[in-house]
Image (tube, rainbow over all chains, first blue to last red; front, side):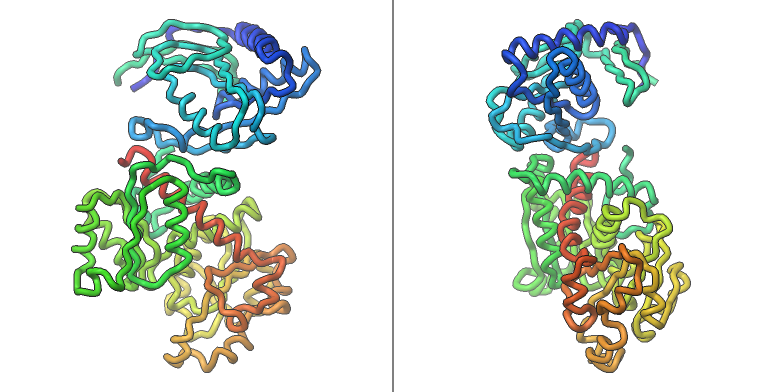
Length: 183
Length: 309
């Protein structure tokens, strides 16, 4: 199976703008940044969390603690995955108990990744509040999970794939929509 | 990642990239052990049977802990007091376990090749070799490699000296494979009566003088001396062995300054290792125990957690 690129959903500038807006919304909703901890979900969420942190530092002059969370060992769909799952690292800069954790991921789809992320998070501590920031919400939820901060809502079909690309992994910042093709 | 190894029987077909991938995965498992809640649900619903025909404490406990930290269901089946002592064959035991729904079997057996045999006889379950005869002990070798790799971060060009009873040691055989694949130079030392006949075919060198063997080594690996070997007349006495090959501070001081001292355990103090060395700053013996849990978690997850099921 191969992927054919259909359209560009967001350019680098679009991504920057969305991240800046989400950063402001995070400050607003939490009435400041005092208790906020950003937690990026491996792998691309980690880099998006870092970008939100950089924007917050610029506008609020506060360096928000930022961690990374790997949810591989908490997944419930292992046997359905095509590639063998690879475990990445989890690291928290501080104890998340009593904090406002903002989970950051690239795309929300079925909601199963976030379900796993919540389980993983609860094993690490007891945050006061957990919020969710995603760059793209593509619909088709299978669980009652909704993001608090969304970069862009994109109606998709299940045959399509939304790819968020970040410079650190993919060499480019953009969001594209692809279509699965047989052969 | 394309993981090709269905079972873990020996390390013959393991390429450098397979080993390095495993070590990297073990590092992420290692970090789990430090968490307040160490258990993850990755292998929930999988049944693992630990089938031990030979006495073993640390390998069995280490596997059991790894299985439990990944939330697998664990059954321990030991040979004594079971159907095995009533004359059941290994094959029938294996089929029985599979009929009970085992997804994986960890086997320790005195006969070389028993893990391979079991893997051939089982239709569905994955087999992990917990040590078979003098043939192989793959998880021990991988945990040794992990311990050294964590310290040196690259093992290419490092020198490893293995001292002791290489002839009867599945640990030595597996360690030689792994450390050589990772680019180490391996030198063996110990009484000639305890060396295999085919040292050259293992791609290693035998050095009768332990001081020369250890000189500038980055890893000093001591093997357990089994008392039975002395009764077989392979060396005169434990004291004699200790005098000539026992690792004391003086011998270890011949190695490189940052050298690690390792031992698969259980250790015989004042036989192959002095307390000053076993408890010294260069000793990694307890780290090896910890590494064992992380490495076995990584192996269990790779062979049971993914597409194989």
